[in-house]
Length: 556
Image (cartoon, rainbow, N blue to C red):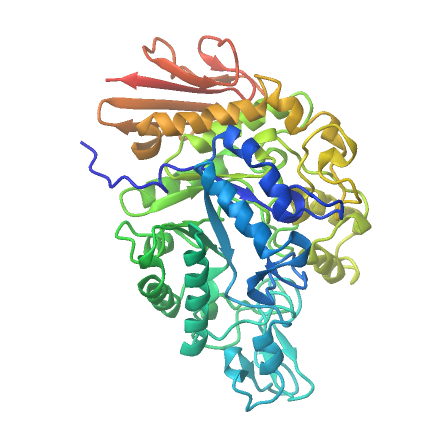
């Protein structure tokens, strides 16, 4: 008998909203809180339990809200705190919960703390951030920023440098200062008392800097890596345990850390004893195909053997030790059907359903990124002017403007991997701008909205939307999907991703054809069980049709 502790966040499905691109209520071209409130019934119909909001705090918007200037205020683009309170009330009234983004590795350089911090070396807020003297007429060390260039910015007034592991307008907070930690904990408690139900913690694995030594420079890279000094340190774990003691343990929350790393590291953050977080986001599967020099900028097609190896390893190594999070896309990733599936008109619907099946039948909490339930695709922009993402624009300067990468090649890589691929507006209907806004959208709408939109899919019982609704309904009603052990099957098969889930006398058999070709598969032949879901109305003996997915429940 499985004795695993049953908790609500294991049994939930989370829906991520990128507010800027979800729904615009006032015609300014930017999604907002009232737009979210207006579509809560849509999300209730889909059946999700938890809404995760990307940052809506006050921000000058250098990195689309991940540069926060006031943690207790709402960005004007998104509305007011009254709008937030109405949205939260509407979410709770429909039996759903709200998870907020927590961005506390860094703030905006326009936050009042940093404005004071840079005034002088003896300012009381100076130690809220990481300031150091340069060396040899340059920065304190060779670290590179995640957004290209040096991770250090010189402040001409004081002559010192401040650390920014991301944009120069995102200075890193100094978590070694106990006053800073208490400021963060007080802010978190303020939001919990307001009634939110959890936190998604942005780059939380980076908060515990342990030294400032030069990092390794690989493959002729212009800068060194800060990873060994700043990620997954013992100091980070100590800070998170302090966070749990002072805030998290006082509320019934869902907590998920954006940590990346290995399964072994995930078990430290998200152990079954809940000493730190409920779960973490892994990114090993979304980092497949990285170029040794250009990093993410590649048009590599992820093949089944490499995807299966990573995802199975995470399932098996966390099983019985920590809880997994399940995702194929988010606001930092391209559209899943464009990357892992096939977004051609012939196969988009089938492959979107297949990917949903593959993921939602696994052990862990599934995350649906807005539009994923419609099978939304990459927009395949063809001009640099169409892109808004600071990471991509900086990469263009670094690789194309310097003559290292051909512009045509870089455009192809951006069409495949740029974060803007997942940030084009939600496609609600066939009206102008896909019903997202009556104004000019902040980023162009994908022009396929006449064929892919929520209104049409709600009216089509065979749509990707209704398939996702069924996947979510099954998770709510079939315990083996949540709590069953994961057992990989057909691990050498070049086309079929298969596994079983086992709980007491119930067994779930899952098989997904990852390719556009028919694939031999005899797992279901002669099987006595109940088919729970499939993306084909009929099946052929001994094989799976292109992108076919089947799930059967067996009583042993």
